[in-house]
Image (cartoon, rainbow, N blue to C red; front, side, top):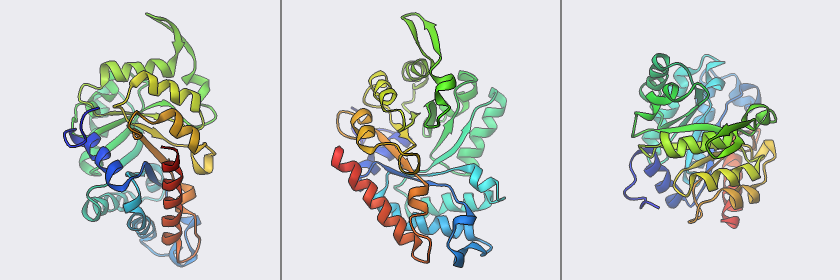
Length: 282
């Protein structure tokens, strides 16, 4: 594996965060104002304030943050998202930010989506959908200093509907998610800035993807916590040979661990608990 001190861009940021905070935890920032503490709920800047306090309470315990753009856009809070990412970069500059946007469109449109994620919002990485083919993610791949986190086998119950369809290849039949993993590892990762999304709820598929892509590619793992993914199985099947390689994301179980004025402290305790549980299996 390349030394963490020499890897460029997002991959280097992530490896340094793994080591510095001894953490594979990613806090997903999915704000739902109806679930905020009552004292905060009606404040005009509640979304920013809630997420900022969560970030400040957990930054020393995580390897990255992952704001989900839809939760901000649905409340016309895109400006709050811009300020939140700027706050993370200013106050916690060693913690990278993945913008969870799952973009994927024809090349000319994808150029604007890349500018949105990296230039407007200032994200260090963005999630992307590969199913329009390489030209739909090329503008993201071209940003060598930024990460491209590509959907492979997602955590939702319907993932098997398409992602496990059998397809014919040069080496015989395989499943579509296996083809995506191999394609990204072999052809799309020229700048070593790719990662894959593999759900915690599919541990056997996670092990398969790790075997396919090898040690160096990070895997973003949604599905622990509220979705019920097993932490021990995730670490056992997804870690690389040095016990890292994973971005294990939890959102609701951390964000809403408390419902009163001490919500940020409750989130901090939940994050520490998840970090320590993960580390027991590393």
